[in-house]
Length: 161
Image 1 (cartoon, helix red, strand yellow):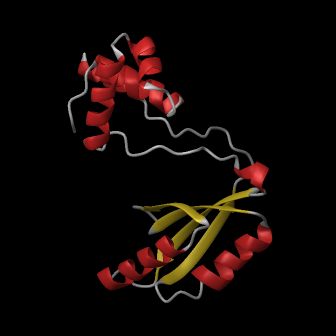
Image 2 (tube, rainbow, N blue to C red):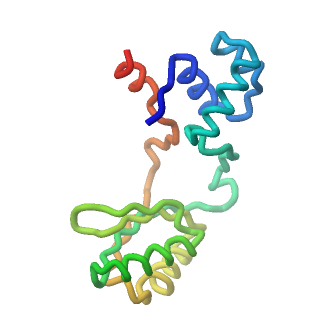
């Protein structure tokens, strides 16, 4: 973990809200000069605290109306089988997020799809037939209560103080 000060945290919070802020806009928000903000931003990018910039697309506006979580149990728990499954996950664009778990399932996948037909195809034609997979259980999202990609930087301030 790298060391960040109050100005860095203010900059990071502002950039989480709007990654397109100019250095002058950041300076106005955090109370530094534009050149200081530029140097700090470059350092935070070099140290991989700022991992990148992207556009946040509205999936539903583009026809992606179904979100599901798919729990996967592997056929065997060998390193080779896990590697094969990870390779599969990285090849499938419908899979937005994938996590290795403790508990009943070995993995949980978050998928974003157009409809139930696409979910059926993913489960029945891609996941179930794969040699690494023993069991698949899916849950369809009915309502999104909270979606947030922001880190809780306020918590860092309390720990840092």
